[in-house]
Amino acid sequence: MTIKKSYEEINEKIKNGEAVVVTAEEVIDIVKEKGIKEATKQVDVVTTATFGPMCSTGAFLNFGHSDPPIRMSKVHLNGVEAYAGLAAVDVYIGATEESEDRGAEYGGAHVICDLIEGKKIHLMATAKGTDCYPCKEVETYITKDSINEAYLFNPRNCYQNYNAAINTSDKRIYTYMGILQPNKGNITYSTSGQLSPLFNDPLYRTIGIGTRIFLAGTVGYVSWQGTQFNSACERDERGIPLGGAGTLAVIGDLKNMSTDYIRPAVFEKYGTSMFVGLGIPIPILDEDVMKSVSIEDKDIYTNIIDYSIQRRSKPSLGKVSYAELRSGKVILENKEIKTAPLSSLQKAREIAEELKTWIKNGDFLIQEPVQSLPLNNKLNSLEIVEEEV
Image 1 (tube, rainbow, N blue to C red):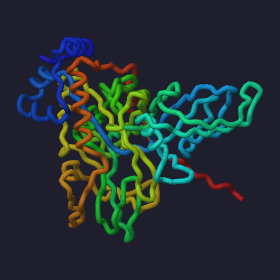
Image 2 (image 1 turned 60 degrees about the horizontal axis):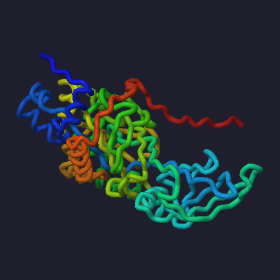
Image 3 (image 1 turned 120 degrees about the vertical axis):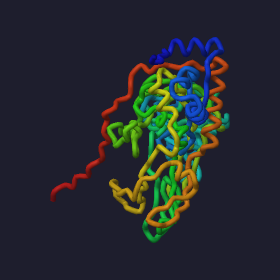
Image 4 (image 1 turned 90 degrees about the vertical axis):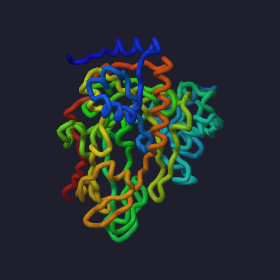
């Protein structure tokens, strides 16, 4: 007999305190012990999580109007420029924008986290002045409580898979994948593997637009497919991508977030980025969903890519499982190479447990997507066309 559950049934069990909720790591042992069918009967929700660097992060802020009013055209927050081409007192500040006086030491990611922590932020804004917005300059201090809206909006987060990075050149290189030592001296990677959300829902059956998520310590939502969404990628027979694939655009109230789950980062000779904590619950609707969430690191592969080649298209030096990467070393071309993660598995586990507690306590219900993510989206690249002389 085929087992089927609905979102309504699962949410009713959550409301009544009867739902069985486990993490994506815990469910692996349950399936090994009881099999897919019995595990599907028993478990209602599986929590997944990730905590890793994601440059495509930022926040929309609305400061409220000054008296006399101003239509801001240039805005700096603690010396970091925010984009003001939106409306009179709306801005978007990106995590990777660097301070004009401190460089990568302090950037948009730091401003966002200082806001979350309730610190005062220096605001400097200028404008050309108009009849309806006559003010040409404002200098003041803001906090998250003094402004109107402040919400995190990340155009790209929660990569479904990503390359492992290596350097075959004879010099050290500095990248968003960290420092890569010369002559294949190390390999870096960034994923929580078997705990990562989109590995546990490879064909986007339960994760889509409108999905309620854990975002940096508060409730957030999937707002759209993420940028560079590459669902029409190479996949294995189970649908698991073998390289960069799906991403999520996510949104949540910055005022309720915690810097326990979102942190600025500075990559040497590269720049500023942001570590973002994200958790997604997967409702166990049927046995196929249970098969997906019981995936293990040994079954998930990625490509080892040479980052010393300065082209968009970089060759793969081979495929490797996340179990091998997680072991701390990989054998490549008869050479033992040390591996290191950029993402934090420990932090991802914390998030999965926190989300599990929210659900078990009835504080978080599962939201059915209002629209599915596309399965045939291809990734385009920028063509540089030289002008004829």
